[in-house]
Image 1 (tube, rainbow, N blue to C red):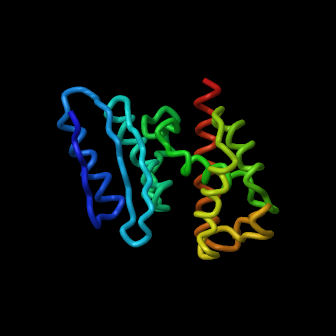
Image 2: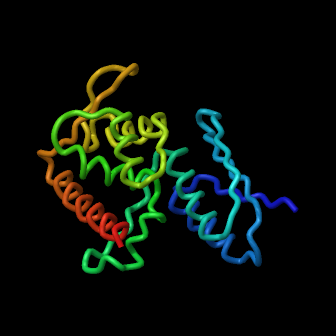
Length: 188
């Protein structure tokens, strides 16, 4: 059976909301093929989603982030309890995890996508391809409007956190708390 899920002219938030609605009414998990196309550029991205419903929703969310450049609002983490179910770093997207690594680990000096990938791997015990780290860093840089400054050229960009910004300082504090809670959980 083939089902077509179309969301024309909707934001990634609305697409995720509609996708959640569709999978919530399914009796058992089945495969989805998701295609995102831009009518202005004609470019298409597709993704095959398999697994249980929660896993499918998380994969679709990550796909929307990477294919559209959109960042979903971060989920708030309760710092009052290290055993809080809200601190499920497994449920965090790769982009969210990478942001935590950058804000907590690179407060001083410049860093590259390779540096980020190495710290990410040692922190979360999972690999982050250098190309993915580069894509995420470009998103955080956001043409100079984000929390990063970028130096160099395409063959080797380096970045620096704009630690003079209040928003960056808040993210640094938040990320340090998250990493300390993750280390406490892993140490149990």
